[in-house]
Length: 144
Image (tube, rainbow, N blue to C red):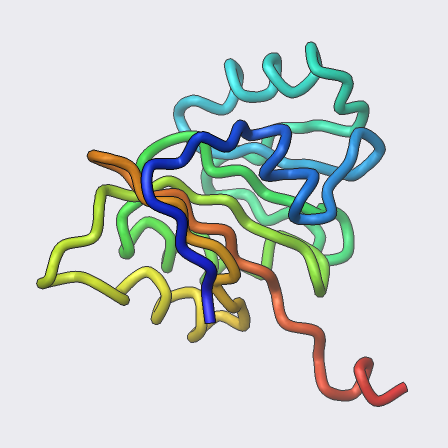
């Protein structure tokens, strides 16, 4: 079950920290706004930040977080996730979406679930939502 917050007053640094992502974590940024996001992260002390170009797949065991630096649609997200998990098991994806409406409420969460992620946090603003999804740990590794 995801935790929802109305009118987010939380900053990205705090959101990353609360998601277990710190200055030494491997972070990838993708989307049209990836360069400004990458520079923003670097200026705030994040040391292992890189861009993931559209159409490219990051090694599954590489990134602890993937930040989508634009407003994503369900079809764009599904295309991205179809290319691979993008983050290691237990890693997070942070995605901004258009605000949910009655017609598409739950669509993004369904896309995440279908690709092995659970939405763990939802921040609702006036026009946008930010979803934090954590990649599930495989049952074999969890049992070990």
